[in-house]
Length: 101
Image (tube, rainbow, N blue to C red; front, side, top):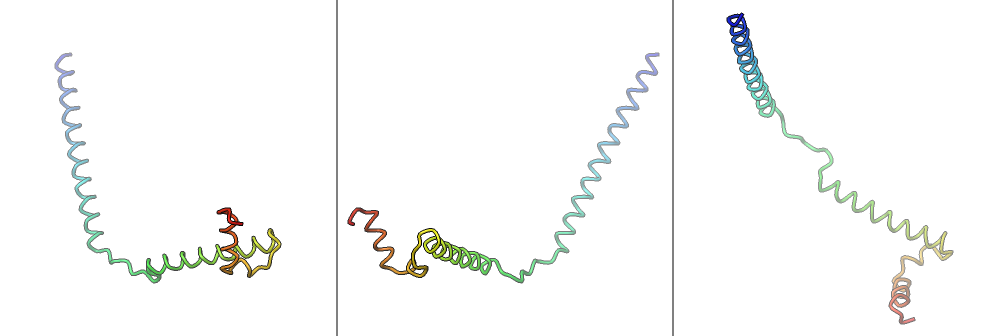
């Protein structure tokens, strides 16, 4: 009975060693395949470069702010739409905030 237990334990040890060795081989082959893919991979050629994307986002944001000022001042404030873009309007607003007027 003890001999059978020892044999079973021995077989389990051998099986676990084989499993570990198979896993390490699988990892090595996966790593090699990944490295080969990286070597074969062509660099990305962007149609719309990043610097141009940043510029477009900046311009669209600027236009959205201008449009929001015009719509907000003319509809909510009841003023003349293009008046909000004049320097005198902002100077008057700063004077009100700073307490000069």
